[in-house]
Each structure stands twice: as structure tokens, then as C-alpha cells.
Image (cartoon, rainbow, N blue to C red; front, side, top):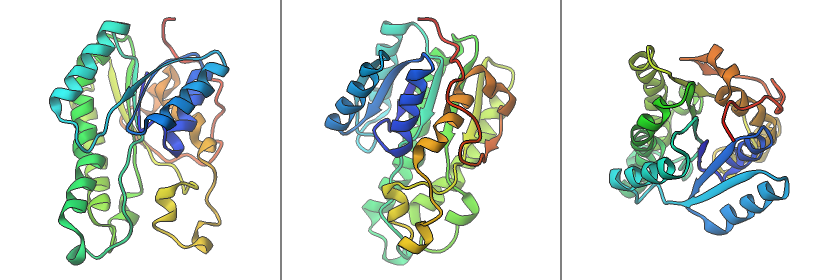
Length: 243
């Protein structure tokens, strides 16, 4: 199981939940100290994980192809890919958005996700039930004023889920989206004032939804963008993966 953005709020919670469910993990992220702390937490609970430091902003198709080769060398196939990495600098009028910040948001939130998925598809096809899960934001909300490149990328992600699902419908690879509710993460803090964040919950409460979509139980959500409530499911569902 490959988790992109593994050291972020939801990425970390999902990685721990997947490890508890028996998955062997590849933890992808750009902050090595945070990846190391996550690895330590997983190993303390007798889980298995490997680190793959990579900055999605600067990585290109060749870097993702190399990642896929290393996963193939180590595991032979890939059972699931969870996209949690995101870039959001804050609410800014498009007219005043720094061009580099706009391009970075589009790239990290959309283009890099596709490049990584494309590189991993041959490995995912080798699994009996391969899963690609895109964590997405509310396209209607982030399509409003001031959301900039991040908001535009979210609309693109919703379209990507539909398109890729249609193209892979007859394959063993299933595609879906996960749209969690407000979570207490740095991204939320950059978008809302404290009063508006009061109803947000901890990312751990959506970890079970990640496990569900990556496990065989997620086949019922194929092609969907699932919008579960917090604690919509437990985190003890078994991951279908050979040890």
C-alpha cells in the first residue's frame, strides 16, 4: 500500500490505521523527520513500512517511474494507492495570486497525483483488487472566490475520478474519491477562522474510511466520491494483501 502525503494530518492517521489492519506500507512524503516519526509509531505496533522521501513539487515522471520500479522490486505488485498530499497557501484573489504559488498548487494537487497514479497503474493491475483513492475537497465550496489554484485543482480531481473510473471499469483497478468533512489540519487553519473551525474533527476520525476504500469492502464505492461522516466505519477492516 502506497500513501502519498503520509506525514500529513489524514495521511498519518490513515497510515497508522492501514498498518493496524495488516497492510505493508510505502510512506511517501517530503519531510524526512516526520516520516521517521511515523515509521517509528508504526513499528512500535509491529507494523511494516518503508520510507520513500520525495517532494511532489519538484518530482517529474521519471521520478515516479523510478518509485514504481522500486516498489516492483520490493513487493512485485501494489494493492492500493492513497493520495493525501495537498498544497494550499491560503485564500487569495486570483488577480493577486503569485504565479509560482498558483502553478505549485495545480501541480501538487492535480498533476503530480496523476503522474504518480499513471506510474503505478501497471503494478496495481497485478493485484486481484487494486485501489486508487483520491482524497478530495468539496468542489462546490472550493470553487468559490479566493480558493485559487487549489480550488481549480479540486474540480479537476473530481473530474479525474469520473474519467479514470470510466477508463478502468473493466480492469481489476478501482478508482474512487474520499471527501472527508472539516478536519483540524493546517490546511483548514489557513482557510477558516477559529469560529468556523469549531465543528472540525481530528483526522483520525476519517482513518477508518480510508481503510474501507483501500480494502475489499471499498469495491462497493467504485467510481464514487464518498462523503462519509466522522467515524462512519471502524478501522479494523482487514486489508487484502499477502504478508
